[in-house]
Length: 128
Image (tube, rainbow, N blue to C red; front, side):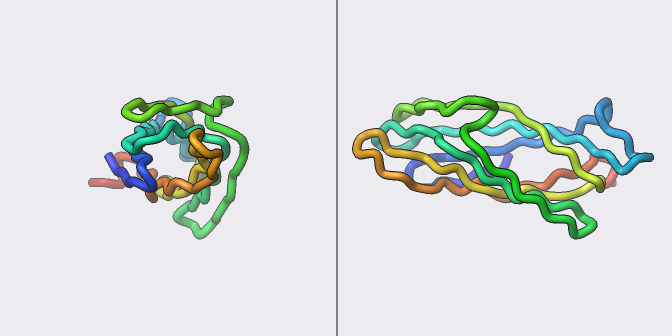
């Protein structure tokens, strides 16, 4: 599990290759990722937006951004956490993702960005 802490918000990531949704013969590789966001700070925060940079090993780069995560803009109290699972398809069997969440401290409506650590999407057979 990969993790990082920014301004009292800890983000941890796990990845899972999904062979049942992949079709290597057609350059389609599906990965799931589980994100665990923990508020280790002193103030409640709300996740407002996300921004991802996605890289295939063939050099392709994509940017994805939007409101919330999987349709939610969760409020995370100090000591609490939010977890979700989402997915990413690649045209290669290896790649990576990194990004940031835009969050707001509810105590004073201050906006800040939380780093999502870079993580790798690797089909298990590539690890041998």
